[in-house]
Length: 389
Image 1 (cartoon, one colour):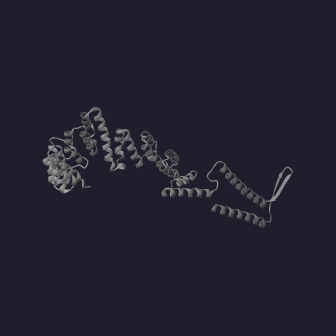
Image 2 (cartoon, rainbow, N blue to C red):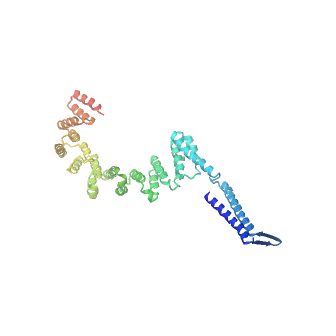
Image 3 (tube, rainbow, N blue to C red):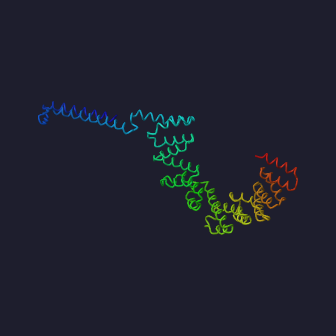
Protein backbone atom coordinates (compact mmCIF):
# COMPACT_ATOMS: atom_id res chain seq x y z
CA UNK A 1 0.00 0.00 0.00
CA UNK A 2 2.84 2.36 0.84
CA UNK A 3 4.51 1.95 -2.56
CA UNK A 4 1.17 2.68 -4.29
CA UNK A 5 0.82 6.01 -2.47
CA UNK A 6 4.41 6.96 -3.33
CA UNK A 7 3.86 6.07 -7.00
CA UNK A 8 0.64 8.12 -7.16
CA UNK A 9 2.21 11.17 -5.56
CA UNK A 10 5.24 10.93 -7.88
CA UNK A 11 3.02 10.78 -11.00
CA UNK A 12 0.95 13.74 -9.77
CA UNK A 13 4.06 15.82 -9.15
CA UNK A 14 5.43 14.89 -12.59
CA UNK A 15 2.21 15.90 -14.32
CA UNK A 16 2.01 19.13 -12.33
CA UNK A 17 5.57 19.99 -13.30
CA UNK A 18 4.93 19.28 -16.97
CA UNK A 19 1.77 21.40 -17.00
CA UNK A 20 3.29 24.36 -15.13
CA UNK A 21 6.63 24.33 -16.99
CA UNK A 22 5.25 25.18 -20.47
CA UNK A 23 3.16 27.99 -18.97
CA UNK A 24 6.24 29.48 -17.37
CA UNK A 25 8.39 29.09 -20.47
CA UNK A 26 5.62 30.17 -22.85
CA UNK A 27 6.05 27.19 -25.18
CA UNK A 28 4.01 24.00 -24.76
CA UNK A 29 6.00 22.04 -27.30
CA UNK A 30 4.55 19.63 -29.85
CA UNK A 31 5.17 16.05 -30.95
CA UNK A 32 4.39 14.89 -34.49
CA UNK A 33 4.00 11.19 -35.26
CA UNK A 34 3.58 10.25 -38.95
CA UNK A 35 2.87 6.64 -40.09
CA UNK A 36 1.94 6.52 -43.79
CA UNK A 37 -1.19 8.54 -44.21
CA UNK A 38 -1.77 8.64 -40.43
CA UNK A 39 -0.53 11.76 -38.66
CA UNK A 40 -0.74 12.30 -34.88
CA UNK A 41 0.09 15.66 -33.36
CA UNK A 42 0.01 16.32 -29.62
CA UNK A 43 1.65 18.44 -26.98
CA UNK A 44 4.46 17.08 -24.84
CA UNK A 45 2.15 17.09 -21.82
CA UNK A 46 -0.44 15.02 -23.69
CA UNK A 47 2.23 12.54 -24.74
CA UNK A 48 3.45 12.05 -21.19
CA UNK A 49 -0.08 11.61 -19.89
CA UNK A 50 -0.79 9.07 -22.65
CA UNK A 51 2.36 7.09 -21.77
CA UNK A 52 1.46 7.03 -18.07
CA UNK A 53 -2.08 5.87 -18.82
CA UNK A 54 -0.71 3.18 -21.16
CA UNK A 55 1.73 1.95 -18.46
CA UNK A 56 -1.08 1.72 -15.89
CA UNK A 57 -3.29 -0.18 -18.35
CA UNK A 58 -0.47 -2.59 -19.16
CA UNK A 59 0.12 -3.23 -15.43
CA UNK A 60 -3.58 -3.95 -14.86
CA UNK A 61 -3.69 -6.25 -17.90
CA UNK A 62 -0.63 -8.15 -16.65
CA UNK A 63 -2.20 -8.50 -13.18
CA UNK A 64 -5.46 -9.87 -14.64
CA UNK A 65 -3.64 -12.33 -16.92
CA UNK A 66 -1.57 -13.57 -13.95
CA UNK A 67 -4.72 -14.16 -11.91
CA UNK A 68 -6.41 -16.03 -14.76
CA UNK A 69 -3.31 -18.19 -15.21
CA UNK A 70 -3.23 -19.01 -11.48
CA UNK A 71 -6.78 -20.36 -11.75
CA UNK A 72 -5.88 -22.72 -14.61
CA UNK A 73 -2.69 -24.02 -12.99
CA UNK A 74 -4.51 -24.79 -9.69
CA UNK A 75 -2.70 -22.30 -7.47
CA UNK A 76 -3.94 -21.89 -3.90
CA UNK A 77 -4.13 -18.12 -4.48
CA UNK A 78 -7.40 -18.29 -6.37
CA UNK A 79 -9.19 -15.87 -4.12
CA UNK A 80 -6.25 -13.95 -2.68
CA UNK A 81 -6.06 -13.37 1.03
CA UNK A 82 -9.59 -14.67 1.56
CA UNK A 83 -8.51 -18.18 0.56
CA UNK A 84 -5.45 -17.97 2.80
CA UNK A 85 -7.54 -16.95 5.82
CA UNK A 86 -9.93 -19.80 5.11
CA UNK A 87 -7.09 -22.33 5.15
CA UNK A 88 -5.72 -20.84 8.37
CA UNK A 89 -9.11 -21.19 10.04
CA UNK A 90 -9.25 -24.84 8.96
CA UNK A 91 -5.71 -25.34 10.29
CA UNK A 92 -6.58 -23.97 13.74
CA UNK A 93 -9.91 -25.77 13.83
CA UNK A 94 -8.12 -29.03 13.07
CA UNK A 95 -5.99 -28.68 16.22
CA UNK A 96 -9.01 -27.73 18.30
CA UNK A 97 -10.98 -30.74 17.05
CA UNK A 98 -8.00 -33.03 17.74
CA UNK A 99 -7.80 -31.75 21.33
CA UNK A 100 -11.56 -32.23 21.70
CA UNK A 101 -11.34 -35.80 20.45
CA UNK A 102 -13.40 -35.03 17.34
CA UNK A 103 -11.11 -37.02 15.05
CA UNK A 104 -13.29 -37.07 11.94
CA UNK A 105 -13.77 -33.31 12.10
CA UNK A 106 -10.04 -32.86 12.64
CA UNK A 107 -9.35 -35.05 9.61
CA UNK A 108 -11.73 -32.97 7.48
CA UNK A 109 -10.26 -29.69 8.69
CA UNK A 110 -6.65 -30.66 8.02
CA UNK A 111 -7.59 -31.96 4.56
CA UNK A 112 -8.50 -28.36 3.66
CA UNK A 113 -5.01 -27.11 4.48
CA UNK A 114 -2.99 -29.28 2.11
CA UNK A 115 -2.52 -26.43 -0.39
CA UNK A 116 -1.41 -23.98 2.28
CA UNK A 117 2.09 -23.18 3.40
CA UNK A 118 2.35 -24.38 7.00
CA UNK A 119 5.92 -25.71 6.80
CA UNK A 120 4.55 -29.25 6.86
CA UNK A 121 3.01 -28.88 10.33
CA UNK A 122 -0.44 -29.49 8.86
CA UNK A 123 0.73 -32.85 7.51
CA UNK A 124 2.27 -33.78 10.86
CA UNK A 125 -0.99 -32.97 12.62
CA UNK A 126 -3.05 -34.83 10.03
CA UNK A 127 -0.76 -37.85 10.49
CA UNK A 128 -1.43 -37.74 14.23
CA UNK A 129 -5.16 -37.83 13.52
CA UNK A 130 -4.64 -40.77 11.14
CA UNK A 131 -2.75 -42.59 13.90
CA UNK A 132 -5.67 -42.18 16.30
CA UNK A 133 -8.01 -43.47 13.57
CA UNK A 134 -5.65 -46.44 13.00
CA UNK A 135 -5.10 -45.44 9.36
CA UNK A 136 -1.43 -46.38 9.19
CA UNK A 137 -1.03 -46.25 5.41
CA UNK A 138 -2.54 -42.79 5.28
CA UNK A 139 -0.39 -41.78 8.24
CA UNK A 140 2.77 -42.85 6.43
CA UNK A 141 1.74 -40.96 3.29
CA UNK A 142 1.13 -37.77 5.27
CA UNK A 143 4.46 -38.09 7.09
CA UNK A 144 6.28 -38.58 3.79
CA UNK A 145 4.69 -35.33 2.56
CA UNK A 146 5.70 -33.56 5.78
CA UNK A 147 9.31 -34.71 5.35
CA UNK A 148 9.52 -32.68 2.13
CA UNK A 149 9.43 -29.47 4.18
CA UNK A 150 12.81 -28.50 5.65
CA UNK A 151 11.44 -27.51 9.05
CA UNK A 152 9.37 -30.71 9.39
CA UNK A 153 11.80 -33.28 7.99
CA UNK A 154 13.29 -34.31 11.34
CA UNK A 155 9.95 -34.62 13.12
CA UNK A 156 8.44 -36.64 10.28
CA UNK A 157 11.42 -39.00 10.02
CA UNK A 158 11.45 -39.59 13.79
CA UNK A 159 7.79 -40.59 13.77
CA UNK A 160 8.31 -42.82 10.72
CA UNK A 161 11.26 -44.49 12.44
CA UNK A 162 9.22 -45.19 15.57
CA UNK A 163 6.46 -46.59 13.36
CA UNK A 164 8.98 -48.90 11.68
CA UNK A 165 10.16 -50.12 15.09
CA UNK A 166 6.58 -50.77 16.20
CA UNK A 167 6.05 -52.89 13.11
CA UNK A 168 9.34 -54.77 13.54
CA UNK A 169 10.97 -53.15 10.48
CA UNK A 170 14.33 -52.63 12.19
CA UNK A 171 16.42 -52.55 9.00
CA UNK A 172 14.11 -49.96 7.47
CA UNK A 173 14.35 -47.85 10.64
CA UNK A 174 18.16 -47.95 10.53
CA UNK A 175 18.27 -46.94 6.85
CA UNK A 176 15.93 -44.06 7.54
CA UNK A 177 18.11 -42.75 10.38
CA UNK A 178 21.33 -43.13 8.40
CA UNK A 179 19.83 -41.16 5.50
CA UNK A 180 19.29 -38.05 7.64
CA UNK A 181 21.40 -34.92 7.14
CA UNK A 182 24.50 -34.65 9.38
CA UNK A 183 22.91 -31.79 11.35
CA UNK A 184 19.89 -33.98 12.13
CA UNK A 185 22.04 -37.01 12.96
CA UNK A 186 23.30 -35.22 16.09
CA UNK A 187 19.80 -34.68 17.48
CA UNK A 188 19.33 -36.46 20.82
CA UNK A 189 16.18 -38.29 19.74
CA UNK A 190 17.92 -39.57 16.63
CA UNK A 191 20.82 -40.86 18.74
CA UNK A 192 18.48 -42.57 21.20
CA UNK A 193 16.54 -44.24 18.41
CA UNK A 194 19.69 -45.31 16.59
CA UNK A 195 21.02 -46.84 19.81
CA UNK A 196 17.81 -48.85 20.15
CA UNK A 197 17.88 -49.97 16.50
CA UNK A 198 21.52 -51.10 16.61
CA UNK A 199 20.78 -53.09 19.77
CA UNK A 200 17.75 -54.74 18.16
CA UNK A 201 19.80 -55.74 15.15
CA UNK A 202 22.62 -57.05 17.35
CA UNK A 203 25.21 -54.64 15.94
CA UNK A 204 27.09 -54.69 19.24
CA UNK A 205 30.50 -53.76 17.87
CA UNK A 206 29.21 -50.66 16.07
CA UNK A 207 27.21 -49.69 19.13
CA UNK A 208 30.26 -50.15 21.35
CA UNK A 209 32.27 -47.86 19.04
CA UNK A 210 29.63 -45.15 18.97
CA UNK A 211 28.53 -45.25 22.61
CA UNK A 212 31.39 -43.11 24.07
CA UNK A 213 30.55 -40.35 21.56
CA UNK A 214 26.88 -40.51 22.52
CA UNK A 215 27.46 -40.52 26.28
CA UNK A 216 26.64 -36.75 26.74
CA UNK A 217 23.28 -37.36 25.08
CA UNK A 218 22.39 -40.67 26.75
CA UNK A 219 23.46 -39.45 30.23
CA UNK A 220 21.99 -41.82 32.85
CA UNK A 221 21.03 -44.34 30.15
CA UNK A 222 24.68 -44.72 29.15
CA UNK A 223 25.38 -47.34 31.85
CA UNK A 224 22.27 -49.31 30.94
CA UNK A 225 23.24 -49.36 27.27
CA UNK A 226 26.83 -50.25 28.08
CA UNK A 227 25.50 -53.19 30.08
CA UNK A 228 23.29 -54.29 27.20
CA UNK A 229 26.21 -54.08 24.77
CA UNK A 230 28.50 -56.07 27.05
CA UNK A 231 25.78 -58.58 27.84
CA UNK A 232 25.03 -59.04 24.15
CA UNK A 233 28.68 -59.59 23.24
CA UNK A 234 29.42 -61.81 26.24
CA UNK A 235 26.32 -63.93 25.69
CA UNK A 236 27.27 -64.40 22.05
CA UNK A 237 30.80 -65.52 22.98
CA UNK A 238 29.59 -67.84 25.76
CA UNK A 239 26.97 -69.47 23.55
CA UNK A 240 29.41 -70.08 20.70
CA UNK A 241 32.66 -70.83 22.49
CA UNK A 242 31.83 -71.53 26.14
CA UNK A 243 32.69 -69.99 29.50
CA UNK A 244 36.45 -70.45 29.14
CA UNK A 245 36.50 -68.33 26.00
CA UNK A 246 34.42 -65.73 27.81
CA UNK A 247 37.12 -65.36 30.48
CA UNK A 248 39.84 -65.16 27.85
CA UNK A 249 37.91 -62.50 25.98
CA UNK A 250 37.55 -60.46 29.17
CA UNK A 251 41.31 -60.51 29.73
CA UNK A 252 41.92 -59.18 26.21
CA UNK A 253 39.61 -56.19 26.58
CA UNK A 254 41.17 -52.72 26.91
CA UNK A 255 41.65 -51.55 30.48
CA UNK A 256 39.16 -48.77 29.84
CA UNK A 257 36.40 -51.35 29.41
CA UNK A 258 37.59 -53.70 32.16
CA UNK A 259 37.30 -50.83 34.66
CA UNK A 260 33.90 -49.72 33.37
CA UNK A 261 31.15 -50.55 35.90
CA UNK A 262 28.69 -51.41 33.14
CA UNK A 263 31.04 -53.94 31.56
CA UNK A 264 31.98 -55.41 34.92
CA UNK A 265 28.34 -55.82 35.81
CA UNK A 266 27.54 -57.51 32.48
CA UNK A 267 30.55 -59.80 32.81
CA UNK A 268 29.59 -60.95 36.31
CA UNK A 269 25.99 -61.53 35.19
CA UNK A 270 27.23 -63.70 32.35
CA UNK A 271 29.50 -65.66 34.71
CA UNK A 272 26.51 -66.30 36.97
CA UNK A 273 24.38 -67.42 34.00
CA UNK A 274 27.16 -69.82 33.00
CA UNK A 275 27.19 -71.27 36.54
CA UNK A 276 30.66 -69.90 37.28
CA UNK A 277 29.75 -68.58 40.73
CA UNK A 278 33.25 -68.93 42.16
CA UNK A 279 34.70 -66.72 39.40
CA UNK A 280 31.82 -64.28 39.86
CA UNK A 281 32.55 -64.08 43.59
CA UNK A 282 36.24 -63.41 42.96
CA UNK A 283 35.35 -60.49 40.69
CA UNK A 284 32.74 -59.06 43.05
CA UNK A 285 35.07 -59.16 46.03
CA UNK A 286 38.10 -57.83 44.17
CA UNK A 287 36.22 -54.96 42.53
CA UNK A 288 34.56 -53.84 45.77
CA UNK A 289 37.57 -53.74 48.07
CA UNK A 290 37.10 -50.00 48.57
CA UNK A 291 33.38 -50.30 49.27
CA UNK A 292 30.10 -51.43 47.74
CA UNK A 293 29.46 -50.51 44.13
CA UNK A 294 25.89 -49.56 43.22
CA UNK A 295 25.92 -51.84 40.14
CA UNK A 296 27.90 -54.80 41.48
CA UNK A 297 26.63 -54.97 45.06
CA UNK A 298 23.10 -56.22 44.17
CA UNK A 299 24.62 -59.15 42.25
CA UNK A 300 26.06 -60.65 45.43
CA UNK A 301 22.61 -61.95 46.37
CA UNK A 302 22.74 -64.24 43.33
CA UNK A 303 25.85 -66.11 44.50
CA UNK A 304 25.26 -69.82 45.14
CA UNK A 305 28.39 -71.27 46.76
CA UNK A 306 28.90 -73.96 49.37
CA UNK A 307 31.59 -71.88 51.04
CA UNK A 308 31.27 -68.14 50.25
CA UNK A 309 33.96 -67.21 52.78
CA UNK A 310 35.45 -64.24 50.93
CA UNK A 311 32.02 -62.64 50.36
CA UNK A 312 31.03 -63.14 54.01
CA UNK A 313 34.30 -61.60 55.24
CA UNK A 314 33.84 -58.57 52.97
CA UNK A 315 30.29 -57.98 54.17
CA UNK A 316 31.33 -58.38 57.81
CA UNK A 317 33.98 -55.69 57.26
CA UNK A 318 31.33 -53.33 55.88
CA UNK A 319 29.01 -54.10 58.78
CA UNK A 320 31.76 -53.19 61.27
CA UNK A 321 32.04 -49.81 59.54
CA UNK A 322 28.26 -49.28 59.39
CA UNK A 323 26.12 -51.59 61.53
CA UNK A 324 22.89 -49.71 60.71
CA UNK A 325 22.87 -50.50 56.99
CA UNK A 326 20.04 -52.98 56.43
CA UNK A 327 21.20 -53.84 52.88
CA UNK A 328 24.48 -55.29 54.24
CA UNK A 329 22.62 -57.68 56.56
CA UNK A 330 20.11 -58.54 53.83
CA UNK A 331 22.85 -59.45 51.33
CA UNK A 332 24.74 -61.47 53.95
CA UNK A 333 21.52 -63.32 54.77
CA UNK A 334 20.89 -64.20 51.10
CA UNK A 335 24.45 -65.44 50.54
CA UNK A 336 24.25 -67.58 53.71
CA UNK A 337 20.81 -68.93 52.75
CA UNK A 338 22.08 -69.90 49.27
CA UNK A 339 24.99 -71.69 51.01
CA UNK A 340 22.51 -73.58 53.27
CA UNK A 341 23.90 -71.84 56.37
CA UNK A 342 20.51 -71.20 57.98
CA UNK A 343 21.96 -70.09 61.32
CA UNK A 344 23.92 -67.19 59.82
CA UNK A 345 21.16 -66.46 57.32
CA UNK A 346 18.47 -66.18 60.01
CA UNK A 347 20.66 -64.02 62.23
CA UNK A 348 21.50 -61.60 59.39
CA UNK A 349 17.95 -61.44 58.00
CA UNK A 350 16.40 -60.82 61.42
CA UNK A 351 18.77 -57.88 61.84
CA UNK A 352 17.86 -56.63 58.37
CA UNK A 353 14.08 -56.64 58.92
CA UNK A 354 14.58 -55.06 62.33
CA UNK A 355 16.37 -52.12 60.71
CA UNK A 356 14.11 -51.91 57.65
CA UNK A 357 11.25 -54.37 57.22
CA UNK A 358 10.99 -55.68 53.67
CA UNK A 359 9.02 -58.40 51.91
CA UNK A 360 11.98 -60.22 50.35
CA UNK A 361 13.79 -60.87 53.64
CA UNK A 362 10.61 -61.82 55.52
CA UNK A 363 9.75 -64.44 52.89
CA UNK A 364 13.27 -65.83 53.08
CA UNK A 365 12.96 -66.10 56.86
CA UNK A 366 9.73 -67.99 56.29
CA UNK A 367 11.57 -70.45 54.05
CA UNK A 368 14.18 -70.99 56.77
CA UNK A 369 11.36 -71.80 59.22
CA UNK A 370 9.95 -74.26 56.68
CA UNK A 371 13.34 -75.98 56.47
CA UNK A 372 13.19 -76.44 60.25
CA UNK A 373 9.60 -77.67 59.84
CA UNK A 374 8.38 -74.83 62.07
CA UNK A 375 5.18 -74.31 60.06
CA UNK A 376 3.54 -71.98 62.60
CA UNK A 377 6.48 -69.56 62.47
CA UNK A 378 6.70 -69.92 58.68
CA UNK A 379 2.99 -69.07 58.25
CA UNK A 380 3.34 -66.04 60.51
CA UNK A 381 6.32 -64.76 58.52
CA UNK A 382 4.56 -65.35 55.21
CA UNK A 383 1.59 -63.30 56.40
CA UNK A 384 3.88 -60.55 57.62
CA UNK A 385 5.83 -60.58 54.36
CA UNK A 386 2.80 -60.35 52.09
CA UNK A 387 1.40 -57.49 54.16
CA UNK A 388 4.49 -55.39 53.43
CA UNK A 389 4.14 -53.28 50.27
